[in-house]
Structures are given as structure tokens and as C-alpha cells.
Image (cartoon, rainbow, N blue to C red; front, side, top):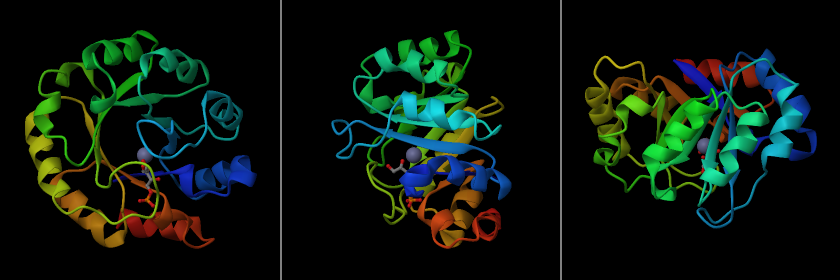
Length: 211
Ligand code: DX5
Ligand code: ZN
């Protein structure tokens, strides 16, 4: 199981240090939550901040774009050093085009689904994605509770992708207890904000999620 700590729960006044600490603590990806105050009711940071963080870690940067519209900002995140760029199926009118754009920039393409969006929304883009991000909370804030219905969606997606090389990532309310549910359903990567930053021992917190 890969763990992708979300820097949404980091100390924003010390972001570079926090990214270095996560790297030393055994994180697999650095999860970057980009919010626009429109698609989601909260605002975080953009490509310039991500670019400044890039030099603090060799880990893959896993960029979760909660932005609508999104296509016009994808190149900026690619240039800023993203490795995986994930867009929301609900936030782009032409999902297939957005995913093609990400791959055309040499990046891995991810698609995310809000809790209310059925897995059928991505049935015809499976060959265009490298990662599927199942939101187990309504996006916008850290520290929310895992929505149990999403376990079934994870399992359904696991069946849908068959032998394709697609990672299933789960984001929101991940704790050592809900991590087990995600693992049983077929998740490959867990995003965690609160659970990783809850105490100063990030390595222990990451290890606890890995199970
Ligand atoms: C929510 C973000 C998540 C968030 C998870 O909109 O996409 O990545 O940081 O935070 P926790 O782990 O606290 O639920
Ligand atoms: Zn996220």
C-alpha cells in the first residue's frame, strides 16, 4: 500500500520543511490539494507554490486539481513539476480531452470522482487514465469522516479496470481503521492529511496507515 500524505494538513508557514519531513518519514507520493474556491468551497495554492516545493523532495508529486474549469491550468502544473495530474470528472466538460492533454505533456493522468458520482462516469476513459482517485469525503476540507458507501465504489472500479495498469487512490477520512476497508476493497494508494500530521512522528503515522 502506498501512502500519499496531503500537505493540506501541513504547516503552511513551513511547507518546504514539511515536504522534506514527509520524504524522510517514508511517504510514497506528495499529495498536493489545489482548490479554487469555486468547484470546492475553499482556496489553497497554485502552481508557483508547487514549483517552490518541488526542489524539496524527489518523490512523485501527486496533484489533485479541484478546479473548474481546469484545462487552462494543467500546463502550469506540468511545468511546475507535477508527476501525476488528477482532474475531477465533474469539473471538466470534456473529460477525455483533459486526460489527453495531461498525457500529451508527459504526465500521468488521473481522474477523480466525488462521493455522489457513480463509477460509470469513467467507463469510457479507462484507457486514458493512469490513476483513479475515489473521494471518500466531499472535497474541500481536511479532517472529515470517511463516507462508508465509497468502499463499494472502490471495489466496483477494481473490477472495471481488470488488468489495466491503473492505480486506485482513496482520499478523505483515511485513518488506520478506514485504511483497512480501503485495502480490502482494492485501493493501491491512500491519501491522508489529518492522520499523517496528527502527531510530530510522521513516520509512525505513515507506518500505521500502511498496516
Ligand atoms: C479534501 C482533500 C484531501 C484532504 C484529506 O478535499 O482532497 O486530500 O486533505 O484530508 P483528511 O485525510 O484529513 O481527510
Ligand atoms: Zn486530495
